[in-house]
Length: 296
Image 1 (cartoon, rainbow, N blue to C red):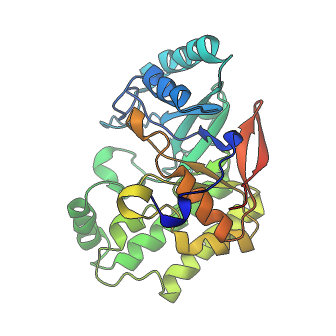
Image 2: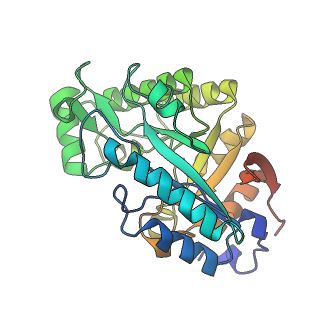
């Protein structure tokens, strides 16, 4: 725990999580296990956001055939636990290209409470198969190989391509929250030629944020790596820029294991307040609202 967190006053209205993955995709626990952990820790609200189906099968995306069961299970849990905490049905939807993204009818017609838009893959052609994808969210070895093989050994080209996809996703719309907006940096920062301070990087990132602000979308503060690495997506150093652009944020853990549901949340809230934020977005009674962060 960070030193200044020892006496951080916590508002129960901020005890929530909207980014989580269960056994319907690559999570390691049934949905009900995550809810039970949330309840045991006094949560007010909890949302499920399995990885969306894709035009091809992966080990970590939900199969399209499982969607009815996913929605039915979430409804069952709403009925069973809804008197104790708010339960929401969400989905983390991949942007691949103009033909497959959160805005297409299939995703828009699903009875979801919210949608997270994320970029995990960069298509190499308009044929949407796994063999034609560069995954930016896997191990470094595969990422580094892709930089060499498809981007001429220049990580800048891959990163700029990633942010171009983020911007096209934002333009297409059909979702509420931009998920882990700078996730490409997980591997990108390990490559020769990458720097968070480089003009080209700051422009690509800032241009993406400017479009998010223009479209009135929220940015997720993803705390998955807060405790192990003292870092979030987006990076802590860019919180002041988010505040300057008046972009609303929400804090979620992107948990894949039940006991990690609340990891990094208090720390991220304290850091957001240090950066000038006085509120974060929460689903309250089914509507997004600004909820104040208590003063330290």
